[in-house]
Length: 163
Image (tube, rainbow, N blue to C red; front, side, top):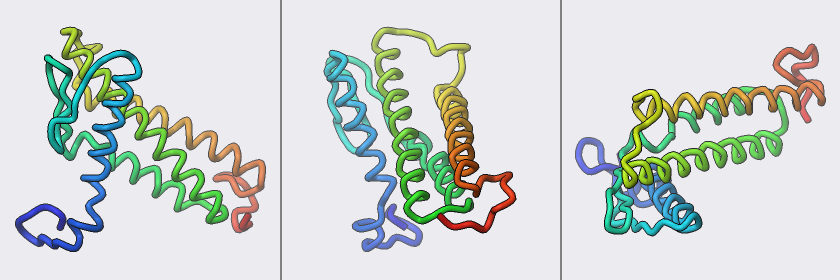
């Protein structure tokens, strides 16, 4: 509804276009990370980050990681716990996924610039998904471990306790 054509809504485009906001944050976050480690890059438009006098990467819808973030949010939402605890875990998990995506975009741009090959000749989306799901499973393990301490974990006998 935020892209022109079909069921387009200017209201949704102006106020609920989270993919554009996520893309912008990833582009500028990657640009910042690259500048911190000594590389000069520029966001040239709403889709591209370009190394100064070098290659560029294009962030299309499938690069944003919104599916991974949605999975994480749904997992936390579906579990027991207080609203405050859930919000903390949702924000923390989404920030971690955002951060590894910034690292992926930055490393991909450096790899293009230095003519490096991607390990195992794998598509960078596949490699990112593997790393992201390892991170998610690790966060699930920590979440469940914390939930067990307060008696509301996945395998606890006190599932209806609200904290």
